[in-house]
Image (cartoon, rainbow, N blue to C red):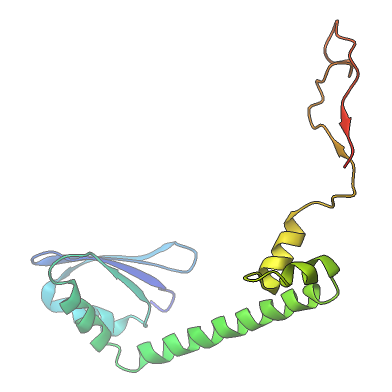
Length: 158
């Protein structure tokens, strides 16, 4: 059961339904649990994300499940946060490496509320304004694809 990353728990009066999947979303476990076996089930499962049906007793069951993972859950959450922090720092470095030499991105960064991330995203998503714009419709009059019409094809240069 080490591959379980997420468990959905449908809680009911006497029989609960647990549905566990791995990182790819493949079903790893699907099990009916009587109320008295829920905590024992979660003690055997490594700490993971648990989604519980919202009802009157969800808070009780979330404390019970979290209590079955006293330190393992905190260690797993801490490791996941450290991994996310490392990924964010890596992406920030890549953004700044692209942002520093780019004059347009630097100018956009001077606008209040626009930082390096937004400035580089804007520069990367907006096409070069110096490149001529050509109508994308190939069935324009005069292009040969519209019989009987001899008007010239339209070009627009910025």
